[in-house]
Length: 308
Length: 308
Image 1 (cartoon, rainbow over the protein chains, first blue to last red):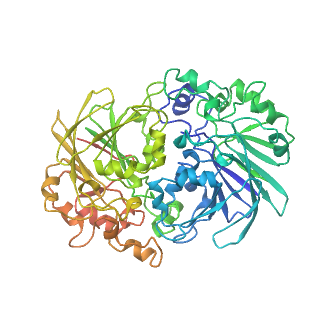
Image 2: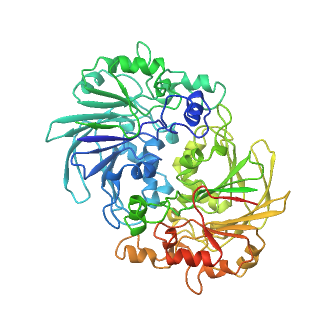
Image 3: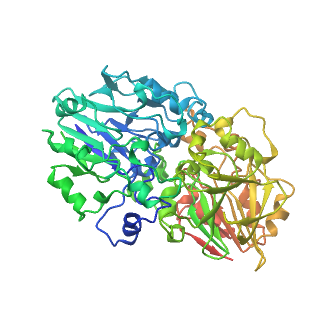
């Protein structure tokens, strides 16, 4: 199984269009040790021919062009056999509306995520122009499904959705939280018994999380914020200055931070993804980046590949 | 007045993610004389400090990062004073949903275009998180408005919307066509009496079009298709194989094509924009490109600048 990081940043990307924080300014001017990153997405394949996108980010067009394995092999064609959604936020789903050039798509999502994107969404009509333009396959928590392409050929990958703490997406705020709002995704390659986990959004710990992650060979985990008040300090009076908890992202640092959990997992590759532009771990020479490395944890970057 | 082409391609961009036509394949492999292009948008300014985007394309994030004049000059800031929409298709509007990082926006559009994007669009709630997140300023055909920034400072630019033949956007197909569905945009710099026209989507000629365009110093015009059956020939049996007329784009070639009109206009800069990936004028050594040049007409590219 091969997983390629198409984008490693949180919503807004790095740099973020309206942000002049020291990270964003520094990466634009080339004065800090950091690389630009597009919004979080992964491409996964068992055979290198048929690919599954984990996340349809707003940067999907440049992400596809930047990875030749995803280029068409015919006049109208795509090697993308399916798209898997972990939650309903726009940085996870908006790219679907960019894949509207009369190409049949297969999308895997929980019923909740599907509804939060499609219901009352007039723009979605652009993906409903002919019968079969989008085939939705429902992810039911803890019920594994074999990933297959549009022709029904199995990919050698089995997918399982595991509910994790989250919240309804920003555009549905006020909606009653449901179990399927946010899931972690486990992909198993059946031939070689390898398991990869993708959890770009986790609001906090659960009793099951540690034992679940222990069973994987590699995992991509929510690395949005270093500390809970990162955005508040940047924009104390502004509408964007919200604490991490309110945004349903578990901060990395501190005794009860996610890094402490990741550090003790007996998993070969533990990789942070969905990293916010304000996070100090983006600077490769920062003390925080060093703490991550010392914990045996990696920081994802666009183009990073993990072979299992 | 300065106009910078942020993107010169039609919806889908060039290359298009699922297209393996000779143009798309050639530009990916570097075997043809052509440059990649992002989806159509223009940045316009009278003073170089305050900018207006004509079109919020799905590529808006990379377009902003690619042009330093649009970078923030503070912790949370944007030099983008307003966004102007010519029609309601997603390649013109979807970028609005990418500018959702708690930044107040001012959008200029006809009532029809505003409705076609906002009504029944649950995703739009992401831009309605605090009072004043988006201020809509209505464009009424033939009634010029002074463009100003959020603080009400005038920009030195006056904008006029002129109805042109068009159709409701793809996601509202079946809707009754209205006058404000598609407009041409005229921008006048009052200090130097210069006029620029932006018409990325024009379905065909009208009696007024020629005299209107004659009054401009530079114009960007719909260069989507060379011929009416370009997509039909590429994908004869597929759902994407539609004639240009059905997509409300006036083809360039032929006796009644738009190039014949543009060729006879006494306007210094006549520039084609919104160019589809299948259009042979994208190849700089094609006979069609030479015909365009011989007509005194230019083909826009990402990064092209026009000073008036």
